[in-house]
Image 1: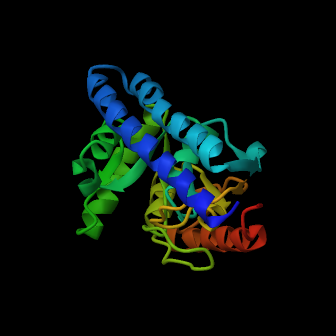
Image 2: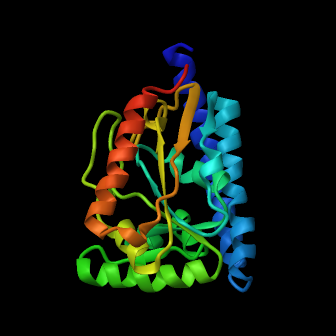
Length: 242
C-alpha cells in the first residue's frame, strides 16, 4: 500500500475512533450502578469495535501463538509495550481484566472516564512504596472478583528494537499473592508505532509464554526471568508480516 493510501486510511480510522470514544465514554458513565463484570462486557464493546475498524480500514490484523498457555484461573499478564494496539488486543485474547495505570490517566476526558468504569488499579507513581502497597491490596481484590491483572513492566511504550527498564511491580504482586505470571511478546510496534498516527497494513504476531509459578522466586529474579523471555521472543518474532 502506498504512502497516500496509508495516510487516508489512518485519517478515516482516527476520525471514526474519536466518535466511538465519545459515544462509549457516555455509555461507560451510565453503567456506574452495574456489577463490575457487566460493566466490563458493555464498555469493552468499544475495544472490539476499534480492532474491527483498524482491520477493515487499515488492514492491521493479528494472530496468536501459545493460547494453550493461558491458565484457567485469573493471572498476571506482563506484556511488552510498543504501541496502543496491545492495550486493545489483550482484551480480546484474554479473559476479563483490569490494568495497572497511573491515576492521572483517569482524569483524561472521555477515555479516562471510560477507563475508570473498568475498575483499574490506579497507583501513585510518585511514591514507589505506596504504589507497591496499592498494587498488592487492589490486586488481591481484583483477583477475588475474578479479574486478571495486566501490567506493562516497562511502564511506557518503547520503539521496536528497544528495551525499557523492567520494573518489579508485576513480580512483586505475583510473589505476594502466589498468582502466576503470563509473559506476552508481540511485534505491534512495527505497524502501529508509539504515538504514531499512521497505521500500516500487516499481521501482528502475539506470543503467549508458559505461565510462571512465582512461589519459588524472589521478585527481582522473577522480573529478570520475565524480561529474558519477552525480549528473546520479541527478537525472534521480528517485524509484523506484511
